[in-house]
Length: 375
Image (cartoon, rainbow, N blue to C red; front, side, top):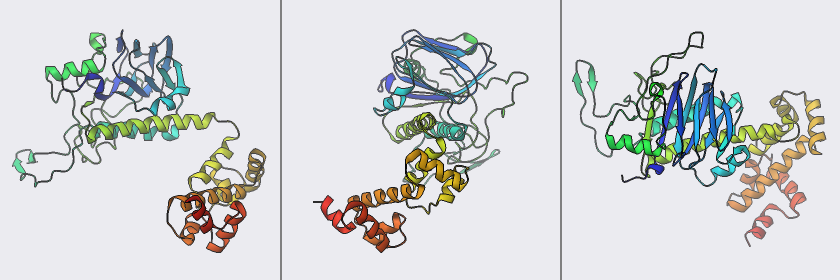
């Protein structure tokens, strides 16, 4: 094998009925991330046992024995999963969510970001087969009874293990996933498996593969990750090429969005004031007013101004001005924009007004500040 099993990225999408289970007595050589969309799973690792319902992100470190399955009493477990090696910064994002050594649960990810996380996984499954555009003219399309055929069809399904069912390939993936065992009726780690039928009375899901999704009957390669993805899709990424970086970028997006969204809900103070401060910091040059910030957090202007001052000790517009001056100082330090453009980019109505406010804050005018910090 030219690529160590631990360095493979293996990802997929399952919708499993009761009876599905995986147990790895020695753990896996790679990390495992699972994002639950529907139903519930029961996951055990490092002495911790957790239930993963919709909006739960579970991340298990390598080398620790683990066991996961459809939770008792649940009628299904629909989830995305990916085996990977984390980038160094990722462990810091996950550390506050550790339940036991190597076992992390990011619970109750807000509804507002779940669609984005789903889309990131769909994009990862599609990007697992990404190739740069060919530098030569493609061969002419041929015609058959089924219609035009070309050497590359953008509607081809994402690569799965049944697209290349070699013994070496199956062995590599089993090694990457730690050689877990499952009940015979629930296996599917290295095969393309069919979507399990929804239990009677459960919400209906679109059957088969949605048009436009990898393996579907419509759409294009560019749009292939925008729709639903059939349960059972599995893709493998080896090597260090562009496809690997694209998939790792999607996994990173999932981790950042999930952990940041949950952390924002756990910080102290009034959530509406935190939201207003975040809006100001994100776009200091925007035309913020007390009224616009109040509307963004569903408060009346008077109530918002009172609450903001109570929480922060300053008025909303004072906070806006401070953010604009910080932004302007960074532009002066890092760019060669003239003072007029720095003023406009930072939300000031005129260079004169900006220079006066900047000097009051920093003790020197903008040009002198730039000369000082650059030595």
